[in-house]
Image: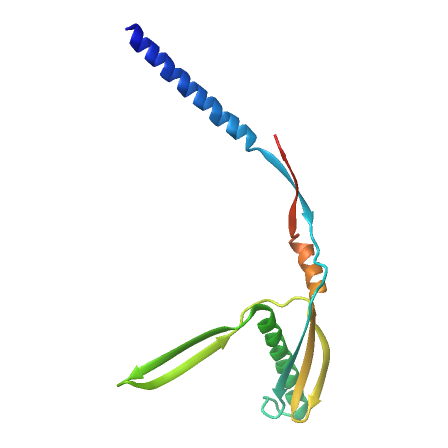
Length: 159
């Protein structure tokens, strides 16, 4: 009986000690992290030009066609900026029938948000309307910092 009592006491003390060690680990996992904001040394500047034909635009007169071409060229320039920033998604497919290529196709798309771009210049080039955009990443960085502060760990204090 004393042998069983001794075994039970050893088992109970082992369980109690392991519980204390779990609590001790919990106490050491509590910490306070201080963050520090980092700013890059250099910022790239991207430029893009978008073109749109004037004559093929919808409109009753030349003024409306010019206005629509201006808007279309601006959108084309924004698309070019988005391609530079985010890249282009390319999807393709081919079909073979009777050991001969019967259909070959591909599709390109771009998806992204451009903030902080400036219209540098809009002008006509022959029968086309052109818009030049400029995207300075220093301005983009400031816009991003105002909403999402990018940070690195400065110091960690454990309790």
